[in-house]
Image (cartoon, rainbow, N blue to C red; front, side, top):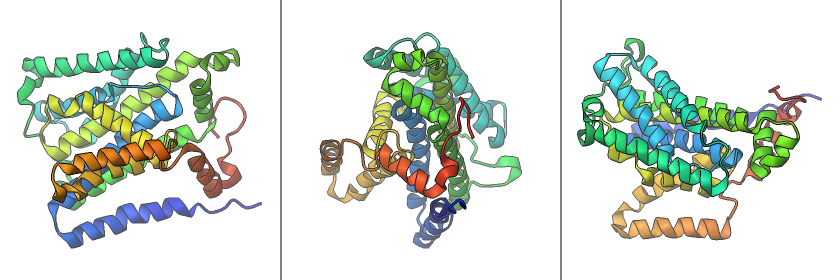
Length: 330
């Protein structure tokens, strides 16, 4: 039996890399380019949170702080050491991933609300450090004059070049999260999410799985932070507070817990809807809050739930998608 050709990834790639940039060029407004770039960056953040909360079942309330560490790492490496964006972006992910492991080691045996409160405290500690370590982070003044994306001397500082560069990184992040979630490894994470004691009794190393997925998610959050720093040219501690963590979590919940497409849909909805309603003034916040409330009330599994995402993956990739036996990836 032949494997069905996966058409959906090609359609999505055509939309992201052809249709959207063509439309933005036709509109000719840097504002719409900026909006699209921010949406892509937050899509990476939502995808990383999806791994932690949606797939592994860990409620993290300090994700914005990890995102901030990635942004400050890129800012410091580029402004003080003069490193190229081709180095600062992955290095920011590595630093955030290592920090995530360091933070995860003493907290991974905590469960439920206790883990959430621990991540909230750690996130506030990181924020206070960024705010008060003036000699290193410049404190509340932030770090400015961060160079734009110029990997290997190629100038991508224009709106179209920046969009395409961020879109490529977002696509890679989506593939990584999709492969983690839709594999035997993802099934092991779901087993931990549903009942970690039962998973441990079945032979899964629960603590190691949690630390691994936390490290992967923190790496992606650090990459998103680096992209934010290079595309805005300025970072400030106020961009990485608790409210940002709640926004990222809301994107995942509204889009659908455990769903990779849901993370992208949720991030686009919660970023683009307030901008579309800007004409109505402050009332738009009320409207956005009402939309979120109605989504939770009538669509408790999100706009694109986990079951729908799994069914879609099976239809697109057929039997070859099914994970093989053993704890590994096919």
